[in-house]
Image 1 (cartoon, rainbow, N blue to C red):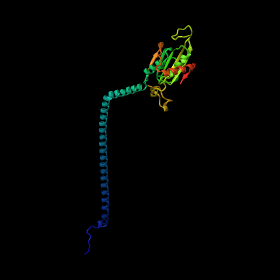
Image 2 (image 1 turned 30 degrees about the vertical axis):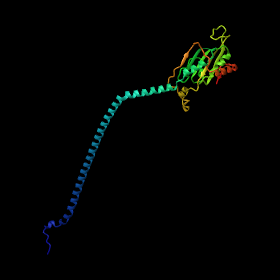
Image 3 (image 1 turned 60 degrees about the vertical axis):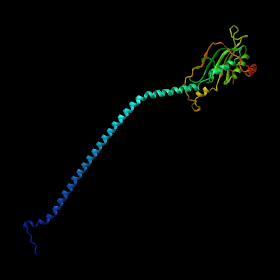
Image 4 (image 1 turned 135 degrees about the vertical axis):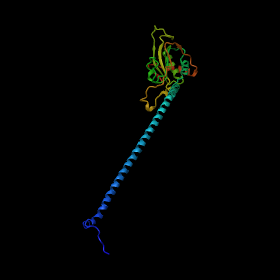
Amino acid sequence: MRAVNLLPPDLRGAAPAAPSARPERERVEGIGAYVVLGALALCVALLAVYVLATNTVEQKQADLTNVTAQADTAVKAAAKLKPYADFEAMALARVETVRGLAAARFEWEQALRDLSRAVPGDVKLESLNGDMGLPGTGGSGTGDPLRGSIQAPAISLGGCAPSQPSVARLMARLRAVDGVTRVSLSKSEKGESDNESACTGSNPPEFSVVVFFERSAALAAFAPPAKDAASASASAVPVPTAIEGEESTTEGGESASTGNSAQAEADGAESTTTSGADTP
């Protein structure tokens, strides 16, 4: 059969171009649809991000409010319990103070009893002072220049004796007292002839003696550690002066130990008294 073209002659020349124009228009319309869909997807994603961020911020704010309320409640509870904590701290501080005082306790009663037995009967005491001699104390106020040379418990004796050998015998007997580590003689001078004295004899010498107890447990309790000895400050535990008696005339009793008395008399006969002499 023979093909017949039914189009008018004026349209026969444009007919071949029609099939190629239609696919280009379809491609343009398809790209525009994809752009619109992409824009919509981006808007949906941004909206989702905004919603999630808003929810997260609100949750964090709620958590902060809860934590703040809990903190306020804890502060109020701690304020109510603060008096109990203060009382516990005060109790612990007092316990430490009592322990320090107990550790620094010195047996003054025993020391004075032993000294009263060691002092010969012909020696008269006009002053007797005892103190701890540790940092933080005000000192005994005896005025003896040898008292401040050693920081240790000590007893200062002042009085008169019939003679210089009696002073030497007194020092020897004091050195034999339990716990005594050093007996220092500050002075032993004969008084004026016209001055009244409790001792008998011609111009009886007046003496000043310091008895040290350097091995006392109280001294070890207050001593600072060796590494901090250079920078150690004064002790914070108050140590009261044990004895402060001035111008009190007492007579020393005879020693209860016969052996110590005989040894003291033998030592006293050979001793010489010089100012500032020590009996180690």
